Length: 188
View 1 (tube, one colour):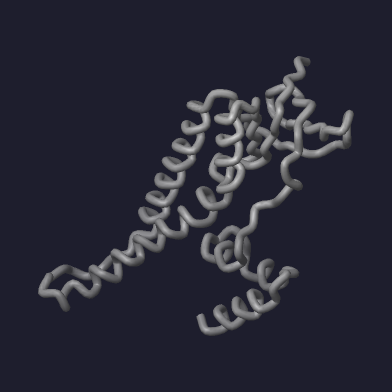
View 2 (cartoon, one colour):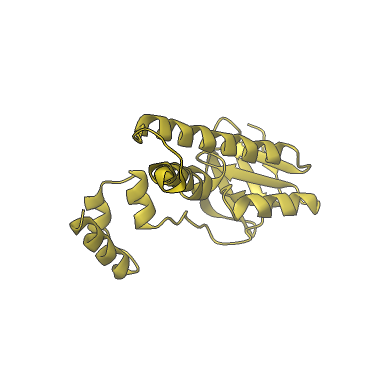
């Protein structure tokens, strides 16, 4: 097994990790960017991009439903949910490919698909084990504590990622979010 040394290892290719890894690599640091899921983090994969894509379709449906008010005659508006979701998937995949391609063009940056975890200290540096087809990577400088992706309960509910009951019964730092969801779903 070949061990590769890096000056910086960034975990997660989301809105913070991707730009940080790119900036470090462009500054001359030998940098590894490790992503366990799809490139782009929460925003591209489960947050901003898919929700705004679906919302755009809803906006178009709303505008078409009001076309008569603007002197434009149309037939009844038909919502094709499978087509909307396919469009959302296509947009998300396009963004993923764009994010991954942007990393390929950066000198000193190695993108690794796999899971990273801290296993202990080694000579003042953290050892990172990668669960992927690549080899172990040792010897990195930790720039920030390991973080998780943050997503609001409302986004999870909108995307169908979790059943509402799991979100409702979850423990949140901000109980008002759970209370708001309870109120929202009681009116539906």
